[in-house]
Image (tube, rainbow, N blue to C red; front, side):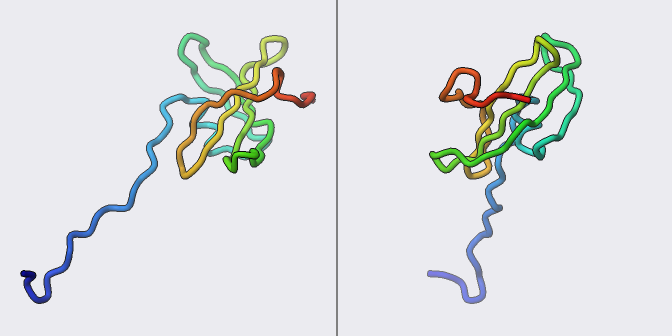
Amino acid sequence: MTTPGASAPVMPAAVAAQPTDPVVAFAANAQPGSETMLALPGSGTTRLRLLRAYNAASGRECREVLVGGGTGERARLVCGAEGQWAEARPLLRGGGLQRP
């Protein structure tokens, strides 16, 4: 039996967990062309640049981040769906596109 005027408890809206990897966190919030310098564990201060963002065939939004600079630059792919972002493996070695 319910009490007149009583309402069901209000559940808080689901909040997406914040990524713990600083590269994933940067990719989740940056726009293509954005750059930042971050202290990465084991690497010291490193340059990050969001190269591109695209929708993958899976329906997920993916973003390619360049980490480092010069000959030591490497790409990391980060994809997200429903507010959850995580590193993903590229389908093609080298990312499939020539980088500028």
